[in-house]
Length: 269
Ligand SMILES: Nc1ncnc2c1ncn2[C@@H]1O[C@H](COP(=O)(O)OP(=O)(O)OP(=O)(O)O)[C@@H](O)[C@H]1O
Image: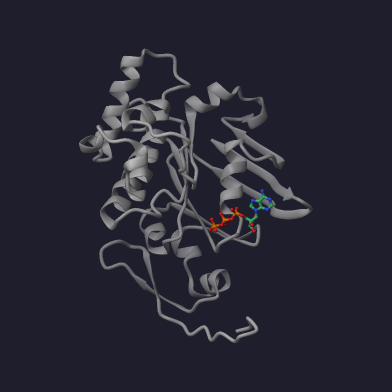
């Protein structure tokens, strides 16, 4: 569905991503991991078509640069990390904006928005404005907007792509699972999701495949068992970890523990 060949991103003579190669197929949920500044958001933004890159990105066998914006937006939604809005909108207004690329009546857009607000347990907030929401509530509204854009829970939704940059970073445990569960349902219909997470255990619970980035390079790529190993994680995060097995899922579970970070006045550790 989405092929990335030799993708590199350079800004101000600095290489932010170097020669990334990966193929995201229908029915796959990918998680991108890596330390702060590793290049995760840059990668997602490049494959969404928002950030210029060298190399090639093909969506449904066609180069991204050969897609009309509207046609691309009907099939691919991108939830960015920053959620600041210039104005307050009602929740159905914001979610209905996800339907902008589709030719349909305002009433249909509104109904779709309400449907997805219900899926995200947000119907009780429909009389509120986005500037009066908690951080987690606003994050769920943006997720609902992206899911609405690709009509991600409909029966005939196939071949579509969700790019999610830290969609669970502000969410409580229940809503972390709710968002990733909806993402799983979307993927199982024959779509693809590429999700940036920092929580290694959430990644382990939901990922079919993991990409682990370090300083703009691909450090590891594969199944959860292949990537979430002690040596690889130590290399990526410089933090000792213990790996165990989830008691009910056949997946690794990661335990870290408090470390000491002595601080000297001149800033050295
Ligand atoms: N417009 C830009 N110009 C120059 N450097 C940039 C620009 N945007 C991001 N960077 C740098 O590129 C590197 C990768 O940034 P990116 O946002 O992709 O990291 P990330 O892995 O998503 O990090 P985080 O986990 O903190 O969100 C960082 O060192 C960042 O400072």
